[in-house]
Amino acid sequence: MIYEASAIGEIALSLLKNNQRMRVHSIFTNGFNIVNDNNDLIFIGTDKNGYFPFGITINKYTMYHIRESLQTGDLLKTDTGAINHHDFMLNLKHAETFIYNKVSTQNTAAVKHAVKHYDFSGYNSGDFSSDILSRIITDLGNSEAAFPLGYLVGRGQGLTPSGDDMITGILYVHCLEPFIAGKHLETLSSYIRENVTTIVSESFIRLALDGIFSRRITDIGDSPGTDSMDALLELGSSSGRDTLYGIYMTLNRR
Image (tube, rainbow, N blue to C red; front, side, top):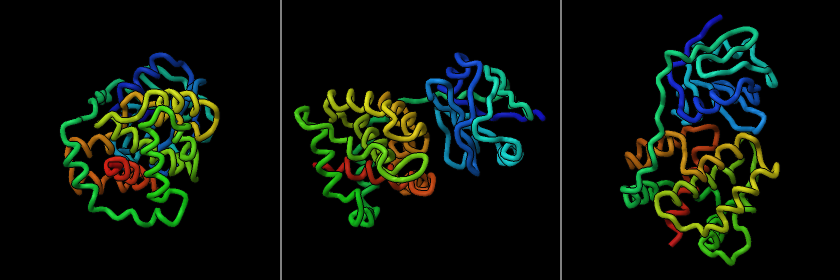
């Protein structure tokens, strides 16, 4: 069976150009992840969670039928024109290329104003209380502090543990208003490669360190307000809220 992709991110396109084989890493209702030997990740799925520079977009009909024959560990033949599975081919030739735009730094005050209306008090009874995150965020600006993000990396459950999603939010604000000491950024870059979290989180954090985020996150800076914030909250079971909490705490660190 031949299916059509509607859009492809420029990072995904680059990975396909340089990898002739990839494998299925994880499968869920709205998409699946494939990785190469270096654990570089491409997300293939519907637009329910927005667009990703490292993603390939397909419709719900295609995803439904692909899931019937897809299994974790399946090998795929890949190039920039198609992804081939033994039961189907995903044609990429007519997909629109999603060009990533750099993070907008013009609306930081508007983002801070919009996010302050959300209630994150539920975090205060667990591992991610405002006191804990405040200390971490403060120490990130101090090059003499012990690695502050070690507490968050890999903490929580799922494909992207809550602590990792919060790190993504923190790194997004760093792109808006740089404040993290270079030493801590370098340590994070090397630390996440030591099997301390999931492959998916490692991939997301590596991209965030390069200033690359999903559309749901960058939309917050492009169009600050409840619409973009609420759209991020819908991401995953808790990923969107965890990311927004990281953004909220970082913007209010002073």
